[in-house]
Length: 110
Length: 116
Image (cartoon, rainbow over all chains, first blue to last red; front, side, top):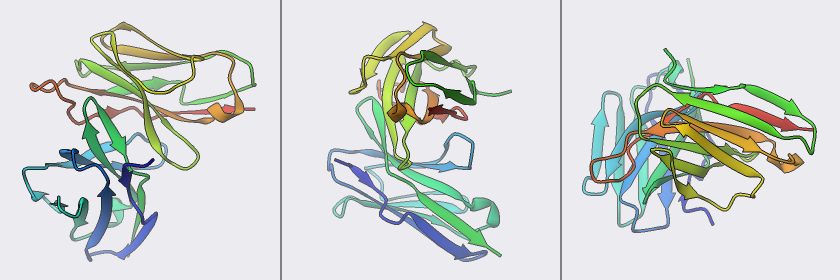
């Protein structure tokens, strides 16, 4: 039973355009969400987070939006750069642990 | 300076063997974790330790035994390896939040275990 879902396994975006990565969750009790970025042969690295008391959090080119009623969050990257090509994991904090989605592979092409 | 390091990076072994993966963090964090990323790329928590004490123990076979000799180390020992144990294992650490909740986690580079 997957509580955090990323339904798009891959996304391809042209450099300079916006990348939108989506994540859905099933448990309305989740109250803190994170996005991680992962390059091949490396561990995930923390990117940005959002608490359920907010609906938006921005950090440079990265913005995360949270829609609690729809149990949906999205990560916007603008403008996208080739170095953003990686796998992006959405995660929710539940008690003491992180529950990860399956990831979306983003490819930014010139 | 590597914040969270794991050894070995690759491990190829035969079924039935016993192997260990080591993890060390130099971030001064209180909490450490082991995750398994399976063939479907699903990252799932296995264990977590806070100040050398077991906090989370998900439904993992008894063949997997974590050991935390001190706050900076969390090793994973696997007995009687099976084909299905083949995966990438990630160690992570995090500070313990002031509310007692989990903060963002810092991951090691992963150990790719292949059981033949």
